[in-house]
Length: 242
Ligand SMILES: C[S@@+](CC[C@H](N)C(=O)[O-])C[C@H]1O[C@@H](n2cnc3c(N)ncnc32)[C@H](O)[C@@H]1O
Image: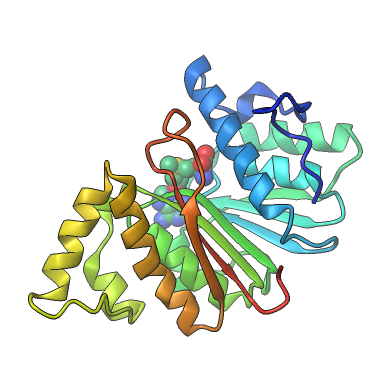
């Protein structure tokens, strides 16, 4: 994947219609920076011809940026609700000769439980930017179910995540001896709302699910403070993913 999108160091940006971004200039700027940083991370891991799924894609800025940056990839964004920006982005990409992007409306919880199916049965790369609460954990499960080589998520709204989902459903034991793991994890999730140190702790714990599934896991800070308060990413890479 070629990164032409953003310019923290003055690089040229890929143009995307304004509908892809929040209406306030400040939020739009922050979203551009977030998308650019994720493209930088992904560019070393994405391969030509990959199927890429963006879960909880919202307006679709990251989805469309991935499709533009990697025209040989097939890119699917889905969200529980439909966004007016989707047809605008699909049409814009077609107008510049790129027809690898589509959006669908699905509930991630239902996709993971197998009650409904997105239009791809397998994916090479599964991403999620600012997935709130338990959506992060469902997205990690989706990466496993689609047989992904690369999973990349930036969690959001840590306080709304569920220790029960992480401990019981993902089967991740934080390894706390003295007190209930559920209580301890609940407190860590709350603290992670505004502390990058706690975000790193929680992401390392959530990342253990991917380790269990055979991924090599990297956890790190994706964004500077001014770009987002939810700054930490979890990346799962299967052998050979770079
Ligand atoms: C904080 S927004 C992030 C949107 C986008 N990834 C971005 O960074 O601009 C979280 C998104 O998750 C979507 N969402 C919430 N619940 C969902 C669900 N059950 N299944 C799929 N998407 C969901 C919301 O509609 C929203 O677009």
